[in-house]
Length: 446
Image (cartoon, rainbow, N blue to C red; front, side, top):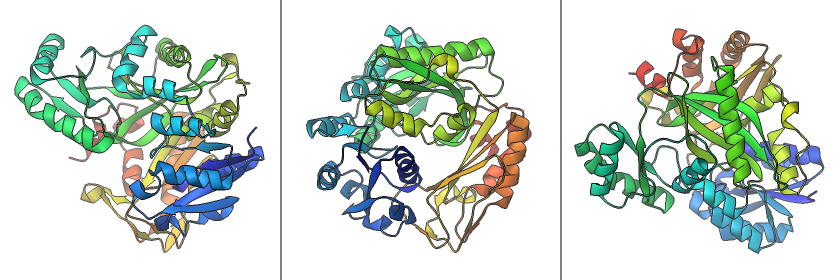
């Protein structure tokens, strides 16, 4: 097992990893930017090192500065968390070259599954359903038009690298396809340094279902069942829950087994999330693979009792999975609400600033993953999420009631947050009945 781990991230996920390290008897080293110099969680790390100014490119995305900090602190491993460098195969390779263990998949597995075009090929080889579309990156407009005519409109243009809705365009006809192809490629190049795009059939109405998987360095892979992440805005998730409501048991087994098969065939070691879109008949198609821990991992932890962050560390240290598939049981229902410092009433405009009041909820079945406290200043430099409210209960109805109660207790001032929107969603009849798709929130807010 490792003696000392550097955490190449910030905010609630940095705190989450610090706590996992502490429980495993591992020292933690937390890097930070000048914008995060006053963050309370830094005091809980065994050591903290400033790696640069506020802009992420000068700190959390600066590989040389992170590696320098790791060498100065004499760490055994680096945990990248999510976002920033977590899905960069080149960063994993630099860690390997510097004889520092990267807590995540190998550079080869990450490159294979992190690139959407390569991942689609791997999925086909593993007999995982994929959307009809281009076999590889689209080279020109005429090729795009030919592919779209073959699979039928509407189609969606996607960036081969990255995610979060960047480099993504839905096209309902040839004119729209020709117009959007170049724009999508330029946006992908600016966001990810890779302008490759591809085309797939687009589902007008679909649920976003993802499967949590763990693989080790000994050829084993298990699934920890699925999550429903259909409530999103601008392709960014807002609410996640597990298990997915209303999912047929046979379909659940099929989609989960498909995800584990893909991870096993890719010789993947670590935590991964295989994302699918599911149509109204519960036919499912692989969307992409996230080669890291997900923001929404707590809902899976709550229903399975498995600490995913600890498992990642153990796997990276070379330990075989101690959990067999037959040991993974689903207990109750969990819901996660992302609490973002933004104003839903003003098109989700960011709302940074100093917190004069921060009173998170508690009580039975309530978990709060946050780095914020009263007096903390939410910086404008990074993602607006300041915490995750997770509730667990015996069934979905009870979980909804618990989430509503907890949201009403939650007090944050003076900045705007997504708490009022979450309360509105908890009381929405369609959401209560589990009748949502990926466009549900867009329709609700029109």
